[in-house]
Every structure is written in structure tokens, then in C-alpha cells.
Length: 80
Length: 80
Length: 80
Length: 80
Image (cartoon, rainbow over all chains, first blue to last red; front, side, top):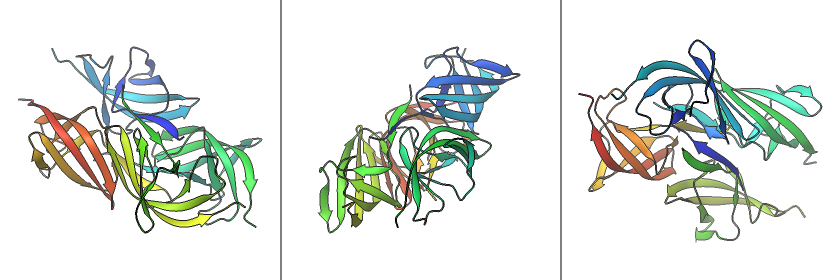
């Protein structure tokens, strides 16, 4: 047995993020996911998006086979 | 660089747990700690305690370089 | 996406361990599994075994969706 | 107690990589580090390098408080 986890190195929102205030967002993901916290990570709408942003995850919660992250958007980038 | 965390395979309370209700407790620990969730783990007062219990962690939160866990006590055991 | 792994807090051999020499054994497991290294962990034949041992994992390898551990058996215990 | 880990989301070589053959390299890092395996990650000479590459980690080994990775270089990018 053991406990299934997923290592995530970027935030993929699929447009499901919820703005809490200013540039702070929460996002729910299925399953238990390990994210880097307190260091810059990429945010993308989907894995294939050209357009992406940089964020810092401030809080991670695991409960009921769901992961909830709180992140602060830092900067936007475009590949165009 | 990278993000430091600690892999924990049991709960060591040092008597700092807080009863929320019935057999549900919360515990704050320094740093980011990865605990197994939803599966039985040992609970000890200290690493060397003879006396221990079994619990299931229901929720883990990482924020501000602290880890907070919510766990449900299942059974008590004594080595005596 | 992301990278799936499994958090393991004990060694479950299912009798597939291979003795390398003395009390050093290797064990192959499917998938990527995160084990605690350099600290005592339980070894069981199956999840439900009464009989168990204590070991220290000395080496962990991840490759081709398999995990190989090298562990040193420390002590045997029986619940009888 | 517990077992200290570091979550790494990119490979930082500091020029210490060793070519094994073709575009396969090994790299030793201090401490136990968790890397994403089998998925593309960035490779940089230092955290601040403009120049970077993409690689896929094929193998991770943890032993004696060291992590050794084997990675395959995929593509080079320059910000200039």
C-alpha cells in the first residue's frame, strides 16, 4: 500500500482559479499533490499554453483527496 | 536552491496537540513536513515513548514555514 | 499532469526480497516510491503480518517506473 | 525527527555534470533531493543563468546523504 502523491512543478489552472483579493488566488486540484512552496513557479492555463505567469505558492492544504493551494501572482509573460 | 521539507512517518506530539472535539486533534510543527494522510500512523509523545497510539491524519496544511495536521485518534497501545 | 509517486512508511516484501550478503537485502517495487532513508522502518511480509522486523534503508533507486531499495535488517519482532 | 528532503524543480549543474555518452549526463548533489523523473525539466548552469536547456531525468539514486541523477539533454535555449 502507501499513499499516492503527485509531484507538480508548475500550476495548471484550467481557468478554475478563484481570485481572493488583489493578486491572491486559490485553486482546488484532485488528489494529493506536492507543490514547491515559497519559491517562484510557473502558472499556465493549460500545459500547452504559450502565455504564462510566475507565482509564489503561499499555502497548501490536503484534505479529502483534494489539494487546495493559495498563490500570489507575480508577473505575466507572453511568448508572442 | 530548492524547497526543504521533512518526511515524517509518525506523529510526535511532545504534548503540544490540541483537542478539537472527541478524538480529533490538531498539532503545529515547525517547517514543511510531509505526512501520510488517510492511512494509520503511530502517535507518540516523544520518539522514545513506550506508550503510543494509532491515528489517521485527515488534513495537512503548509503555510509560513509551519505544518498543521488534523488527526483522529484510533487506538491506544502500551508496551507494558 | 505531474509525476505520480507513492509515499511509503514501511517495507512490505511479499517475500520478493533478495539477500545480497549478511543482513543486507534488495527489493524491487513497481512505480516510484518515496521511502524514509537512514532511519528505522518496519519490514513486513504483507500489510497484515503479525511478524515484523526493523530495518534501515541505505539506498533507493528510481528508474523505468520501478523503485529498488537496499536495506539492512536490524531486529526481528513477533506479536505472539 | 524525520528525514530531511529538498524538492527540486530544475537541475542546477554548476558545471559539475559528467557526460556518460552522447547526451546522457550524471550529476551528484548533496543531501536527499526529490526531482521529477520522466518529465521535461529545465537545466541551468546556475540559478541565474540566462542560458538553459531542457532535459528528462531517467534515474535518481539516494545514498549516503547524496543524490545522483542521470539525465538526457533534449534541447538548448538562449534568452539572447
